[in-house]
Amino acid sequence: PSVGHVQPGTRKPLTLTFRPTEPLNQQVELSATLCSIAYEGEAEDWDDAMRTVSFTPHESIMESRSASKKSSRRPTLEAAEEVQEQVQEEPSHCVLEGSQRPMLLKVSAVVDELTYECNTKEINFSPTVLFQTRVHRFQLKSTS
Image (cartoon, rainbow, N blue to C red; front, side):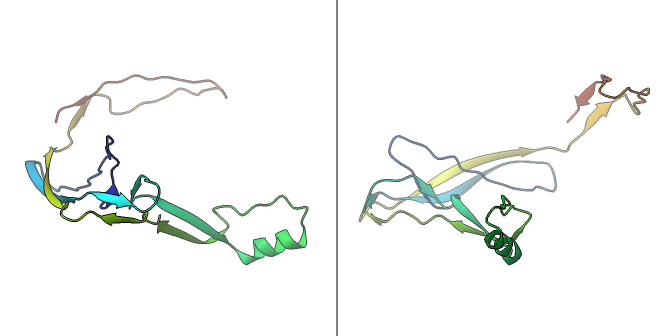
């Protein structure tokens, strides 16, 4: 999440994604802003990663359901014409005056190239009878 409410005595995980193109060992400082808030209703956990998904089914499915009320067909994901994803509404609150303060988040990243070693080049299984299993074990070693 990029915006959220963290209740007193709790924590909220942050997910950072990066796609390096070469090996690196780096520490980065990300700036964040903290402030105290007062809820205008009941305090709720919230962040902008909380989403609501709604599906709008094809009209043909809705027509067939209304024509035959005995039908047990229900709209499925495959039958959805439109999928809408919306961020849940932020709880009503106000920022307390003078409570805003900056905070630096220190993030460390270490990336290396993927290398591995495997002596097995090919696995040939003999014919297997239906519902039987065959197992072949081999060693895969990370050299990175």
